[in-house]
Image (cartoon, rainbow, N blue to C red):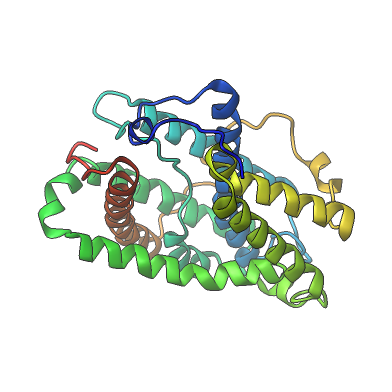
Length: 297
């Protein structure tokens, strides 16, 4: 077993503690790699539902790449604001921000089969719902008395249970009808890679200590990638050439079209997401720092 340490128990409970750079950088990369797949997956699922996703007959690779780039860009910006803080904005906790699966039940039927043209109503709903979500941030702390751990915990649990299906589908070869209709879906290669990542990650987590244990997810992803590339030849860089080296946000790229059904749905899910955030922050501070989250956080 490895005896390397990334800090004392007291240091690890301090959100402002910074481990040595040689360990902080790999752990930071692990955070990015661990959140990368889940952060871009909603964009891929929405594109697939609209009919222009990867593998579909009408695939629009530049548009999908743009959606993925913006998902990563704004996840990074939101994470910096959350961890560093900007005035009253940001809990200043080491929590990665990103896209949310909670909104998919509204997004998928909103764009089902509509192609790129159907993205205008959804994009407008996202903007309005995002503004509503932003405003909730100023009052959600005052509603904590009505959101005991039982309520927030159950919401986080329900969202997690709903994602089990998505996780299994992606382990089998990908979600979406165009992926699930492939003959390779559910094949031995997909399950072998999935279980390899799970087994390696758990083994490193529980049989090693210190830095290696903390980097278990990164190590599992690397091993899974190597198995996919050298064992099954499934790593394909051919579509990378379609992506620009740098992607800048284009305001209202998909147009502006107010669909009140989408707007109301996004605002309702914004409230659910806000409650989920209360549960996430409370759970992380309790488990990581050994204390309850403050109202400001």
